[in-house]
Image 1 (spheres, one colour):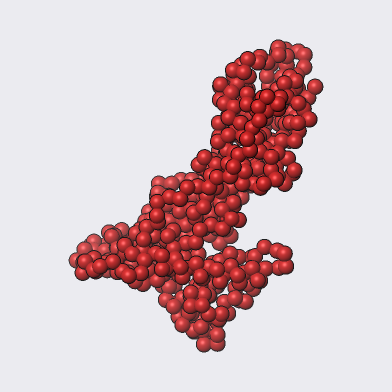
Image 2 (image 1 turned 135 degrees about the horizontal axis):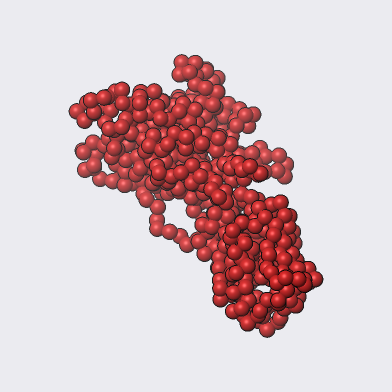
Length: 510
């Protein structure tokens, strides 16, 4: 007899159906797992054996073969423990074969038979619902699986015994309820920032259109302080975005207690981060920081201190919104539509504009320091602003009258205008080509951001004098469209083009 249990494997956030087949036959006593398993899957034999022993069940003295089909797909992770155990229980006659065929199972087994959390339950649940199947997962992941939809039959037992009792009718498992991440501490308020009104304006524009932003200034000028207050200006994730972001965190094993995310991610990796940690990769091709920040903010402080190859690896994801991890036999693609916020000093000592504090190598040190960042990467950043040092007199002033709440209200109105615009331009019954102005491109950008004649003349002249690339030209148009949205205007005016051009200044020394 051969028993079959449905489970899944993952390539990025894509779900691949896996058929777990177990056969018991005569011959030399053995327990073999085939079908290209990695070490974690191969070790599941001992965890399954110990879990069954904890239930008072012993494996028959037969030759047991577990095949994970299709055999040419690499199987990674400990979530194969549960489907292997269920297939064994089915072939031993403990569980009904017909009932088990209706479910997709994944979970890791402890030695005492308890089910421990695994990564990827949310995408697995969505795939199971699409194929009209139920899902069996650990109790800690039940709230995560419940978000797939009300039509999904989810069984989330705490241990293997509870699952067996459920199918035998001696115990009923309660369907899990979807859970949201608890509201964290209130976001930092922009009212704490004194001075730097130009930088605050640029931060508002960046939040309204999801534009990339680079802040250049001496140490202590408030660059990191401004970046930390950006999450308080951004609207919360809508349901579709929350599901998309949570799927990435689920595959990465970072969805705490199976609770769906409700706030936009804010990731701030250190300069010592490796290339796989930032872009994605590693042994199991996990999502990197740029994918974990999808639909949120990726903050890179002290930008030139990151290794240059690592920064160059960001160019493609910033342009396409996808991070592609290439392997010899397959490619893994993770969404990576992020808002890049970067901060840097103008030179290594940081005091380029202050002769009394600057080092002896100024201004040559500025060129050497900033040359670590390539022109193409600078070109992908919409807003370049100088953040000068705050004067001591400004620090003694009372807090500004306008804080994050007031700015966030204007940002929300501008975002709503963009959502309505792109929904109206979407094909009938289709998905909008963009969510924010920063994503608009090609014909869509010309349609929504074409300036008036005076603005077009200014943009053309400025592009020639500033030697803007085609990418820089279009990024000016995107920023101008956001400025018009903040003003509540349908068309892009000359003043919007002028302000957008003022943010295209390249860092001193380049």
